[in-house]
Length: 206
Image (cartoon, rainbow, N blue to C red; front, top):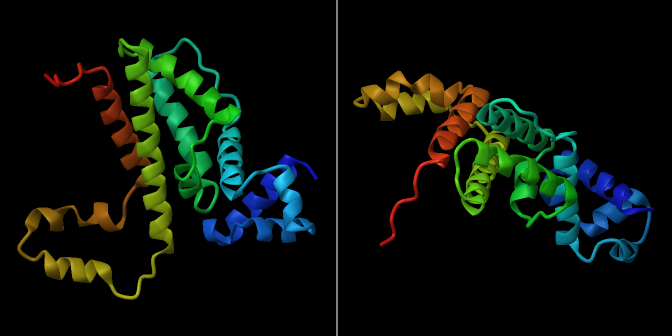
């Protein structure tokens, strides 16, 4: 048994039962070993979750970038990151709950920060901050999308929405965007909005 086997078993449990279904005991049972043996490879469940987050990013494959438009490359890179998170139940929650510094996460950042510098951000530290904001936006949108799938629909929410907003014509006009959202379109729009503001001068704090 090695670290990768443990991570793979944990990801299988994640896909079956969500983050709540992942525990050291459950992973040990899946691998038919005693739970203490896992601690030779991982100091804690948190350590395992960080390895899982890195494994999810690894599923993006090669993150090397070329000489094309840096903003478009960032949009593509982030879309691939989002797809990897969405490929696993609670993938967003796993990533959000870690301070992920695995090799694949670092490789992704190493590819992205120079793209932000090429797109007009002057300072490497500001480029890193912008990258963190883009990652957080991506992870947050994934958590919201994955949480919506698990929410029980016990009432006709659209009918209730229309009743509550009878005197709110703007909300009624955009009801389809609420109840039949194009999540891919919404996400890309948000990323492009963030990228447009990434190279803006920082507001003065004087």
